[in-house]
Every structure is written in structure tokens, then in C-alpha cells.
Length: 301
Image 1 (cartoon, rainbow, N blue to C red):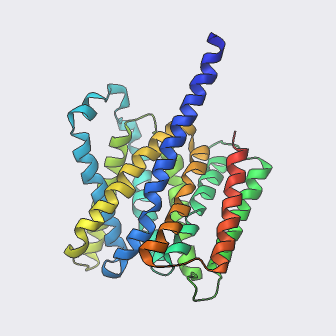
Image 2: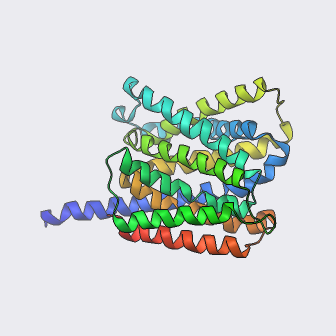
Image 3: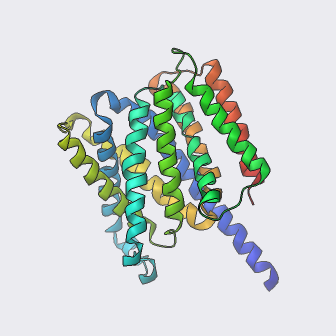
């Protein structure tokens, strides 16, 4: 009986991590179409600041709740030795990632932009393999190439029918690369308090991005402030807390396959939110990405 306990514990951890990953993906997936609604009235770098400030302020309030404070232990606290990793996480995931994504999202449709976010899964997995001692099977490598080819199909679709420009696709790909690095670095801190990790990341990134925005001469758009903070709290705050928990139980490469649901949630949500529709190329690219990600899920060990 005792021999079965490790496998039962492992199954529970995988199930728990999968639930955290899927909830995180759903919340994050909704940020692409909702953020696109705010972009015409807000510069990308300022919107990135407001989104992360919403996450940081919201989680600060959550962290102050008595029940949350009682649930923390001393071993979960961030240490001074974690500062280099935290700095890299803030720069890659909190500053570069959202600014590149929102700048690229201006040049693409909501559906295409959401589908291009599938590249985050690919880059997370490839970085986990090439730089962080994870493994990748031949099937997973073929699947990753398929997803990247589908992204290229979206990037070079002709204008109209919700297609994206090469520059817009490149910017979103850069955001996905930054978030892929962020995911792998965050996995190294996933034993720490997830609320504190995201709180520090969000507040630091929000303050830096806001300072850069004001330094570039952009005044704060007060009309979009409440909506931006709300989207940030759920999409970049609550979502990332669940993502850190998923990283804790699954690891970076396997967390990526569950988080891969986010782009499809965003693409479907863009239809009612933005009044868009799937074109032929978007449909083909979406199917190829879905198949590629399914291979990665079925092949993950």
C-alpha cells in the first residue's frame, strides 16, 4: 500500500497543476481581446503599466486578508538570493513581454493576435530544453515546428479578413519569447509564495512602465483606468498566481501545454467581444496549432 502512495501523490499533484494551469490560461486568454478594446485610447506601454498595476494593487489587497496571511509560512518567503531571478522576471515578463504584445496587437486582429500567443508554449518548451536541462522528444520537436509554421501562415496572410502584418506577428513572437523565459525563471521560484512573487513582479513592472510612459510624454488616460486595472487584476494577477502554482506542480515544459489553452480562449472570445470572425487562413493555422499542441500534451512525460 505504501508503495502506491508516491504515484497517488504524483497523480494528485498533476491533477492539481492541470486545474491551476487551465484556470490561468482561461483568465489570461481573455486579456488579448479585452486589451485590444483599450488600445485605441491608450499607448501600449501605458496600458502595460496599468494592467500590471491592477495586478499588483489587487494582489496587495488580497495578501492583506487575514486568511491569506495565516496560510503563509516562513519557508515560502522570498529570500535575498532570489533577487537576481526576480529582476530578470520583472524585465522579461513584466516589461518586455506585455509592451511587445500590446504593440503587436495594435497591428493584428484580435483572433490572429490570440492565436499567435501559442508561440509562448513553443518558446517555453524550447528554452526549457536548451537552457534549463529539460528534455524534448522527436514528436514534441515536430509539434513545436508545426506551431511555428502556423504562426508564419498567420503572419504572411494578405491584408483583410483579420490577417496580421509581419511586424505585428514579429512583435507578438518577441513577447512570447520574453514570456517563455519568464516561465522558466519563475519555475525556479515556484516553491515561494506565489502571491508575493506576482505582487513584486506586477508592482515593479507597473511602476517602471508607467515611469517610461510618462517620460515619453504620455499623460494618464483616466477614462480607461478602471477597466485597465480590472483586466490587469484578473488577467495578469490572479492568472499568474495560478500559473505559478501550476509551475510548482508540473514544471515549466509541462505547464506550457496546459497554458496553451489561453490563445484559443482569446481567439474564440474575440468573436463576440470585437465582432471578428475566423478567416480561412486563421482557421487552418488554428487547427495546425491545436494539433501541434495536442501532440505536445500527449507526448509530455
